[in-house]
Image (cartoon, rainbow, N blue to C red):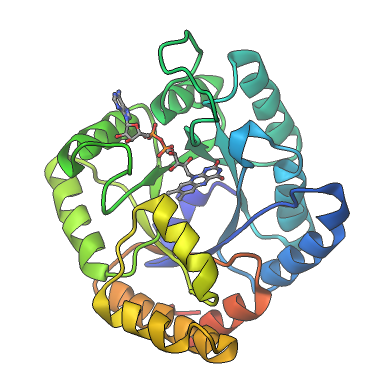
Length: 288
Ligand code: FAD
């Protein structure tokens, strides 16, 4: 099923992100976790694509989610380390695995990347164009409520986002954020430049304070004082941190749904218990 059809019938969707194994040895444990998450029956699940353009298990995990559990899968695909032949192979591979949804991404620059060198894909918009021309996929793309880290200003980032959307994007998923007002401000500005498609709010339940420090430095996401106090208070008590992180994410989601967002996309970090607790705590709020 194409995920863009979901918004015709559902006021708000719930989706979970999973990541594929990085090494062959991890395949069984990752598969086990992902299957448990799929059994929670989200509206769809996304499966990330390895940094540096490595794809080893994305299509396979997406196929398991979809064929084995009846949950539509959204496969991430990055382009900055690829060429046209390789992207066509990936599209063929996804199509033969029955995948109908792709999150089209540029990916982060690999070490030693030369921006001046000729290449088939420079931005995610180039990949969106390619997938659109290939045909048959519902296409999502990433957006950044607080601006992408490389961009000089939020306004410039928004204009690039508009160009990307106009290449044929069907929906957007946001970078994680911890202050809902950042999303509301972004949605307002996006509408003003004519971006009018479903925007899924990316929510990260923080269950491990140390891991969070690294993720925040890479993503450029800001921490509101209220959340910083929680991290400071519970960082050395893992069970309390996990509980507080799930409650904080749940509160964010309640507020987002009350304000009319079209979808909640949870960065599960492959933790079925965290996904289950959120889904169960919010079953009525999310109309499930
Ligand atoms: P783009 O949309 O190409 O934007 C990148 C930068 O280029 C922005 O600063 C933008 O303003 C600028 N730009 C765009 N067009 C132009 C132009 N014409 N001229 C000048 N500047 C321009 N990474 C992975 O490796 N694997 C994943 O699975 C993955 N999943 C993700 C899922 C989500 C929801 C998000 C938010 C991010 C994900 N990422 C993933 C990270 C992503 O690859 C990086 O954030 C990357 O740096 C940017 O990707 P993009 O698709 O947003 O790029």
